[in-house]
Structures are given as C-alpha cells and as structure tokens.
Image 1 (spheres, helix red, strand yellow):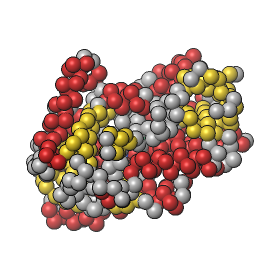
Image 2 (spheres, helix red, strand yellow):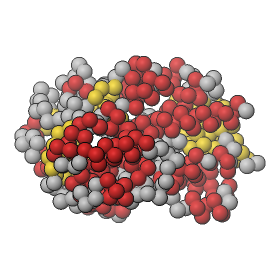
Image 3 (cartoon, helix red, strand yellow):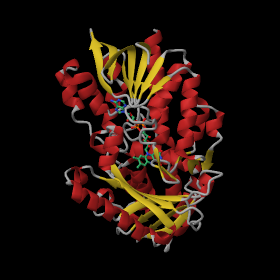
Image 4 (tube, helix red, strand yellow):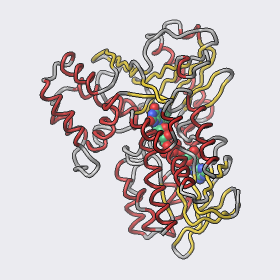
Length: 460
Ligand SMILES: Cc1cc2nc3c(=O)[nH]c(=O)nc-3n(C[C@H](O)[C@H](O)[C@H](O)COP(=O)(O)OP(=O)(O)OC[C@H]3O[C@@H](n4cnc5c(N)ncnc54)[C@H](O)[C@@H]3O)c2cc1C
C-alpha cells in the first residue's frame, strides 16, 4: 500500500471490483481495500473440508455474459453457462421451466390459461419499461392491470424476483419490470468454476491493470477537507486520494465514513428516509465424496405457503425457500456436489437472540431445510457430510451491511447514491442500490457507471 493514490475503492464486492478494474485500466493509480480476508463481498464462497460453498451464485441474467466480456474479458464470459432446469413447487402449482419469455408464455397460456393477448401485452410492457418511467406505479398495480385476481400468476411472476432482490408488490413496477425483463431475455445463468475461480480471475486482472488490492483492511474514515475528499484512514493509516468510491453500505458511507457534519441538515433529513432491503438466511449442505445427487434441476423455488406473500417469505417461521443444487459440472474436474437453501429474512428476528437461542435457531433452520429438501432427495441425510447455517448476523459480520441487508437499498436510495459527488466532490458510491443496481449484473454494471463518473472527476 502506497501513501497516495488517485482513487481508493472501499470494498471488494462486485461493484467495487468492477469500478477498480475500470479505473485501473484508465491509467489511474487505484487502491482497493476490503475489510474481510477475501474479496467478493456478498458474492462470497467458503471452504469446509472438501467442500466449496457459493453464497450468491444461484443465477443471473444473460446480460452478465456481456458485462463480463466488456468489463473483465472473454475468459470470464466464456465461463457463463445456462441453468437447464428451474422448478416451482408450491400449493398453487408445480412446474419446470427454462425461465425465458418463450417458456413463460407457453406456461402462462397453456397451464395458467391466460389469454395470449394479455401475456403478449404484459411482455410488451416489460420490454418497453425503462428507468425513467413512472415510479409511482407499484408492481401490484402492474399485475392488477394485466392479470387481475390471478394470485397464482402473480406468484409465478413475482416469487423468483423476491428471492433475487428482496422486492415486494409495493416496490415500483419499473424496478420489477427491468429485473424480470433481464431474466426473461434468455433464462438464468451461472459461472462455471464457481465463485472461488471467479475471484481468483478477478484478482489476477486487477493486478494486471495495476490495482493494489488489500484485504483485512478496514476503511475507518473518509477525510474531507475544504469540502472535498482528501484521504481515507485504513487500519489507522492515512492514505491520500483525490477520489473515493465506496462499495460499502450507503448508510454507513454517509453517517460513519464521512460523518454527518459534512452534510447539510436538509440532505440528512431526506437521506435518513432511505430503506435498506431485507437480509437472508442460508443452509449449506455438503454431499459426501463419491455420492451423487439425482438430477432434480439446478434451482427449485419451494414453498408450502398458500399464496405469494413477501412478508411470509421473510418470516422466521420459514415456509418458502429456494434450493440451489450444485452438480460436479459447475466445477469441472471435481466430483463435488452441494445444496444451498436460501431464505429471505429479517435482521430483527435474529438480532437479539442470546448465544444459546441463536445456536438453537440455526440448528432448527438446518433441520427444517433438510426436511423440506427430503421431498426432492429423500436420502439427503444419508449422503451428506456437512451442514451449516448463515443468518442476517452472518451477512452483517462479513459485509458490514446495516441489518445484514442482502440486496442493498430500496429504490428511493438511488439519487443519493448517484449524486454523492455533488455534495462532496470526489465522493462516489457503487454497489447494490435501488433494486435495479443489485444482483451480480446490477452491481457490476453500476461499478462501471460509477468508475466513469470518478474518472471524469479525476481527469477534468
Ligand atoms: C444469500 C444471497 C444470495 C444471492 N444470490 C444472488 C444470485 O444468485 N444472483 C445474483 O445476481 N445476485 C445474488 N445476490 C446478490 C449479489 O450477490 C449482490 O447484489 C452483489 O454481490 C453485491 O455486490 P456489491 O457491489 O453491492 O457489494 P457487496 O457484495 O455488498 O460488497 C461490499 C464489500 O464492501 C466491504 N466493505 C464494507 N465496508 C467496508 C469498509 N469500511 N472497509 C473495507 N471494506 C468494506 C464488505 O466487506 C464487502 O466485501 C445474492 C445475495 C445474497 C446475500
């Protein structure tokens, strides 16, 4: 780590990593500091015995292939492969899909008996939606307009998006349509080789473009002098920089890293109204070496709840979860299989549990996930040799996100994230924001947008 850089990127999530790459490529001197022992942020992986578990590699839209190619290189794009089978299993319907417009049209018209004209009009609307449209129209109103009274159709269209970004029927229809439309273009994809390979490839690329990457490095404070960014205090050491791109929590960036005294009260009053998204729980199940999982698809949206209900999806009394099934082809050359159950969750349900209650709640989470998964693989308990749970407290601990928020902030946060530099020249934010900038694709693309702004500032 040097004493001075053009730009310091705080946080090695997909947004920060991509921003750092772009700034490095532009010939600027860049330091990326990550408080955790490894880069990746929420797009994390961890090893246990012979297992590698991916935290956030369940599926992303095909657009990620283009973003990888454009911003990271062909070798990254070439590893993007399509998930073959996505299943829904709930009291309203059971079905299997490739999760694209053509297949959804088939299912909506043939299975749900929705008139073809209504389905076409809905997809037309989704395709035409852009960011500048009316944000007042909620997703609920959007569905009411095209599929009135069809809670089964709403569930089919909404539940996967709720898992993907924590959004609800009350969030803007615009953000729903953009995220849903991204998936509908050509299905759901993953990164062959896993998150561990991705992160090692990213590290190599960052080194190639001259970015210094430092892990175990906590940015404690962003120093502002004469109204402009001057430096960052990293592990107690002051490192000068003319620009800072924070990939950490937006709320903490303003209140803790910069400090309220650098913002006017009117700004703070509005800023304090932004909402963070919900958090997550996960159960990781490692399969014994030599044992195989039957082919049950790669992603199962499994629920026993009667209808779509975003609050119930987050409830501590879990009724809905997604199962990601990792077969050996995800990591070619290995014979590893694993299952990750993901649940949306509320930080408040986990926040105040004492150590004993917390351990018990985690054990319950694991047992309930196994019980639910037995429906698909009855002998799962016999072929597994590792289970572990993550909770909102885990996500908070490893990423420093307020309330362990998994998907950034709700929509109203976007102008604050995008316009920080208007308040404090040299201060930029990137990463999961406002639903549409969230997920692998949203976060990486937002990293590019922010890097462009930071580069303009630095080279003006
Ligand atoms: C359980 C789960 C499953 C998911 N599944 C998918 C999926 O299948 N597909 C998909 O597209 N998306 C998925 N996502 C969402 C996706 O992973 C995230 O939207 C994306 O990775 C977030 O990237 P980011 O740029 O916002 O950074 P983050 O991942 O939020 O990373 C921020 C980084 O900043 C670091 N940091 C924070 N403060 C400081 C500080 N002061 N100093 C130094 N470092 C700091 C943190 O440690 C962290 O590494 C999932 C998320 C979760 C939680």
